[in-house]
Amino acid sequence: MDRIQREISINATVQRVWELITQAEHIQVWFAFDGAQVDLRPGGTLVHTWKEHGSFRGVIERIDPPTVFSYRYSSVPDEEPRPGYQTLVTFNLAAEGDGTRLTVVESGFDELAMDTEQRRMHIQGTADGWSGGLSALQEHAATGSSRDDVPTTN
Image: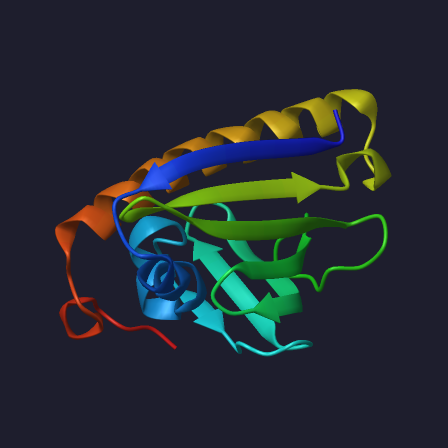
């Protein structure tokens, strides 16, 4: 399995969901609970931090507001993404009635420098992380909190 794909409906506008997936103060609420940084530009960096896992770095590949956001993501904590140690994460947003259809694809697992069992465990952990994170994203979108209501970390 070279890719994980998740699709969810979010009860928020495409622009609002764009903010929730690209702004560090929101990412910290629904995904990277111990800190997030985003330099939102092609070639910019991002960092997601979890105390129990470390900090995972990414390099932004594509930004097409408010519909496409992608980045190369390190599979190893505290290291830059590089061939053999990175995946590609892509968010696609589309209006769906009054809400948004969000599709997240993480690909490139077959290219990781891991043995079969390590790769299987990494894919399972990543899939579990996306499932929990996207559920939390739906909840965060539903709260209606504004940027001023969310704690910031840079």
